[in-house]
Length: 498
Length: 142
Image: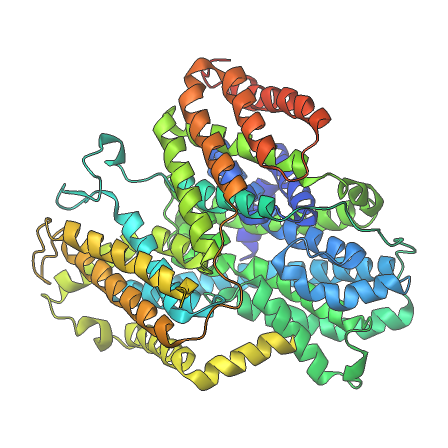
């Protein structure tokens, strides 16, 4: 592991990669602060521009955007009570109350310190556990992979907000869209409607930009963005000794919760921050302080969401099975570069894996430097109105799609996915299962095919192996539990309580 | 009784599942031992059809939506038209396509102000030229 980390720092500290890391975290902080522009949209829009970069550089930059956004999102949550990201929704509760009592600076500092500590432990966690998981995954055959993919899809579908059936439907549709194009085994054209341009399938970027960027712009424009709220004064950045002491345990607990949640499919940084908040409230001596500016309510969730942002890379890189929409986009970015993530990535492309891990630690250092001393500069950026932003997003999206292959039909298709995405979002379906299905669908088919070939067509192969049976059991258990009305009520209760 | 979001969603997915199923039937299914190109799509689209119908049927018994299904027609149509128009106009170059795109998008903005329009067009033309033509050296007509 030490050799790996050494190599990683060599890669990540090269001038180019350091630059892309800086660009990534700066952009991430920026979009994290802007409501209406999230890491998903940004990564989707920037995907085509990373074609020219090396795979390492593009991953470093995209990852920086992702965890940078969770830093930036907390600043707006504390200062103006508007969560820049869904993962900082809980931070609003106590963070803004602290700000109103003149402790905004302390809240920001604790959020940054917590995120930094969580980021460091998280990075260390990846370095420690990812190679172990990669080793274990080497024993996975096609049956195990198929079962794992099914579990990831089911977990994402049932854990998103809204009805379980709706999540599953989106996952299925994603799989079907992923199958468009020529079947590699038989050469048969599937779902191409006789279009030559669809022979190689629908480009991932077209779907991602259409569904995430275009549909989101339409949704944001439907609500009138008034002028930004009055801001509170940042005040002194130094937390008092008592505040620091109060935050130590929540930060460590939040980190543990976040690291655990990040590895699990379907449970993203948003859920982990909620979980951490509830945990802090439960263990607190005076739970009544929560909601009135309890510093633990900032420290815990902020550490949790950053830790989970880091560890969510573990299954994505070592198994090739992403657990969230953002991770699915990351996987898509890797595939664009011709790299199929899996247990062999660490041994075959050590510079990619360790470079990314090291860059995350460097990125966390950069984020503290960017966020704390420069916080006043950032808050002036909050005044950029959405009216200026969305035309730029639209322009970059259109050019991004068009330049894929200089084909205007791709742009039209993107518009089509935008229309569909908007309608489906208005019907309260979630996009995350769809994008996961899109990425994992072809992998699922291939693994099912191979598993059945090895077993001579015997479907029992999926339950014979204990690993694969275990994955499928978890998937079924999740389905049964969440379809039971009692569980649904308690989940609603959990969301309500947070 | 007006149709709920779940009901409408169920119908949409059932229709999508049904059409995918009909299309899958034209591909050779093969057997479990050697899956043909139609094997997997048939399973997936059947599941989709089934769950879509289930969602629709369940919605008939469920309560009405608290917030009814609504589409914000103005941004919906204008943004779609902006993107689609861009697709047709890009062959005439960046200036033409971006000018159209920005004007159409600007019209969709509830907080639009006339004085920002010109600025948006100028920046909107400069940014992609700098990124794609100058930076990435892609052959796009200006």
